[in-house]
Length: 66
Image 1 (tube, rainbow, N blue to C red):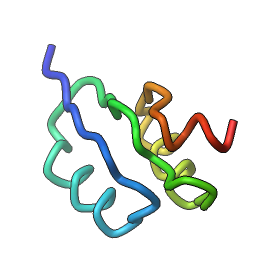
Image 2 (image 1 turned 135 degrees about the vertical axis):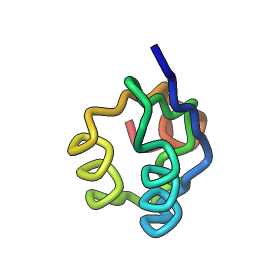
Image 3 (image 1 turned 120 degrees about the vertical axis):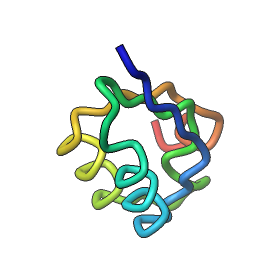
């Protein structure tokens, strides 16, 4: 099994798209926190992660939104 690991996207949709391209051959995708940025929310980032069936650990910035 090949695991793709990334973190600290912080609402950067283009950065996430690039990371997903580079990790396209992975069996599982995991974001180690930092999908969102402080009080900014990005539905587009969450939709992309969901579309690629990725998983995420809640990071400190993500936690402020939750």
